[in-house]
Image 1: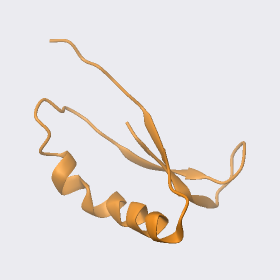
Image 2 (image 1 turned 30 degrees about the vertical axis):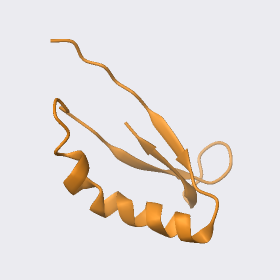
Image 3 (image 1 turned 90 degrees about the horizontal axis):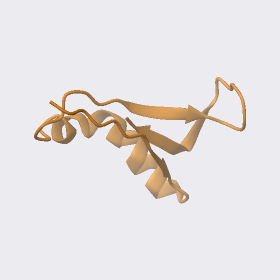
Image 4 (image 1 turned 90 degrees about the vertical axis):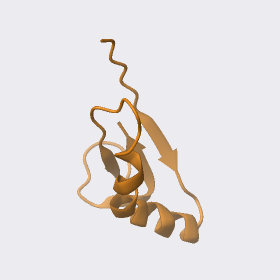
Length: 64
């Protein structure tokens, strides 16, 4: 069995797109988990600015 890993970053600019992306952190699991051949996934948010920041950047998300 061959495994492939990817990390995809998504940037959302408008307020409505940021709200949609935020809700996908909860509601996308039902669709992503049904992907054929998928063994593991992780939805992630990000912090503001460079370096460590405990405050979230509502416009940047990642899918591992």
